Length: 297
Image (tube, rainbow, N blue to C red; front, side, top):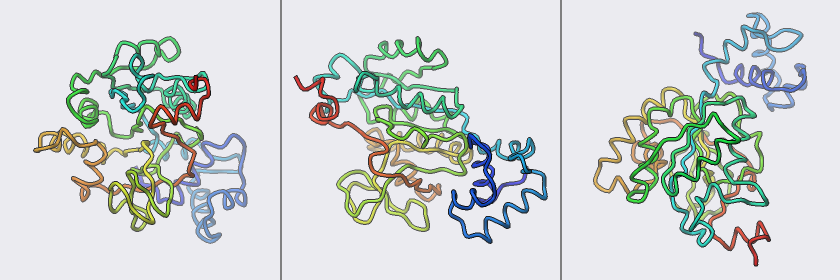
């Protein structure tokens, strides 16, 4: 099947996911391309029958199919030690914030995007995740027996054959902007927001792609734990994660270091820019109390 150039993908994706019809001028305003670039792509899509006056056609949807996200994988095996005491009896993704489990917001966004193949890699207090099946019966669990002996690379190792055309989530994130989870993705990418300075995991970027991945930096993008991996990158990760895990010190790696540092030259990963606050990671019990006053007792 013909590969779509970026401009054509953006037009088809906008039409396929819009809740109402969108005309040429509205589209240009939405995706911020120069008029001649958008107009040329639009015209070619019309000529090939991928869009018409009513929007995207069946042929257009067929062209988008290779870019459809097939599944979502949640890394949820860890202890959540910085959220003690609340995590002594509850895995962090199942902690309730303002009455709702943290992971529910992520799963709801995935389902709203039409993605129903969902996996959760679990370890600490694994049986407690069974409660999710009452609301989300489509969930499948992957067991990580090594969760307490390694960093989260062992969770990635357990799920590595599922990474192609998949979202990967850290399961303990509050998603404040669920529309960030979209049905179609053009290429491998990581969510991030620009900061003048960061003391946390961040990216430096060159030509829109991640150039370096490290703790602390200036003029960088703060890492959010939500990424997408296209078919080719997913296949590479399946072998690269295993190789990195078996290296000296490999069990101490975070799985993100495999494609972004250890085997950086194997991948081209874009930064999908969002705004600070679109996703919130609650790192400590103090931060939990600041967000949800019910814990401040």
